[in-house]
Length: 336
Image 1 (cartoon, rainbow, N blue to C red):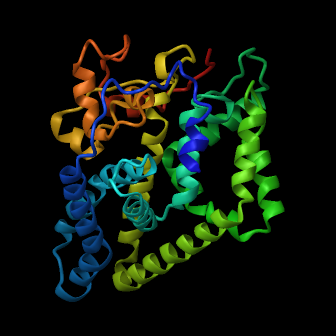
Image 2 (spheres, rainbow, N blue to C red):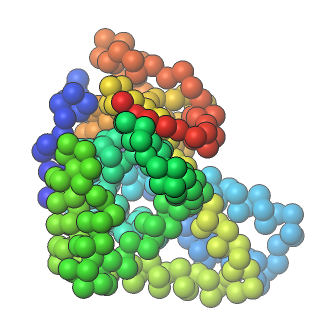
Image 3 (cartoon, one colour):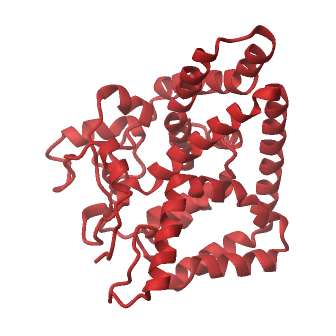
């Protein structure tokens, strides 16, 4: 299964058993689910009807659009909890609601879940270092280094989200073709590179997963095609909203791991954010703690961070989350 795939071989140096068992906060999760689904319904159906048939002053459009984008971290955070089985207590509901959220985000749930759990298992391995432009020896050619730098900035500016949206194309290709493409894309560099490549190729060729990805992709396309139809002449507004959502996801994805040496605990960092943003981000700013205790629900992380007896050395958050997000645009280098 996906969770077993990601945790069976996890490095005990980074992942640890939580100091105590913490139940899923169903009240908090259901409240956030209600909010996110309400905003989704308004964004996809209510907002375009207001724009087209009721009329809205032009100076209201931009603020409302930005408010719709602000909840993107919460939307992704709920998907993230479903990936780890921490969204709802019942497995069937956890899976179904997580998949619905992913469809509304235009993300292939099976592929994103597999990739995220592999990221936990093989954090900052060669395939998982988009910010590193030079190898450990420093002998990478200038052409290769420049290409990796360009790829990195494209990834930051929404390229990661676009790549994830396009992933279902692989499920429509013949399985052997998809496996070859994935094998070349992931590569086999590093001491565990062969294992990483083998697991990704096996996923790409799995018939059941390919079928689910095709089904979910069709639902995503139908949902958003209908939304674009409702927006009518306002369709660029929906496209802009989707891009801003993807920009946030692309910036946030590697933020906790940006320029982190391999000997740092959890190969990730924690950050500071105002209390309001803790709920919006679903404590994604405490990412190092999440990597050390991936089976804990998001609501348990602040207490763990405050518990000095249970918090491992080096987990203190000193840098502001949003300041660190902008710092990703600096040129990075070697990791080691």
